[in-house]
Image 1 (cartoon, helix red, strand yellow):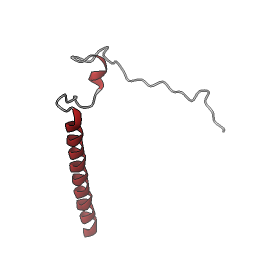
Image 2 (tube, rainbow, N blue to C red):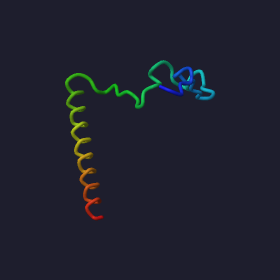
Image 3 (cartoon, rainbow, N blue to C red):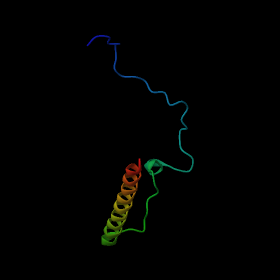
Length: 73
């Protein structure tokens, strides 16, 4: 391995980051989406399964639309 520059680790500089994000504390502020406290028990899994199925249907429709557009070229 030629051209080795000493260390493989590099320092990343993200600039000035605030000590605390406004209005949030702890790990809860790191979530991408706010938690939903309304889902619990067996109902939670039924709702999650329904959401998953709907997302799959939407994705398949989008893929079909993309395939139809590619066929026109």
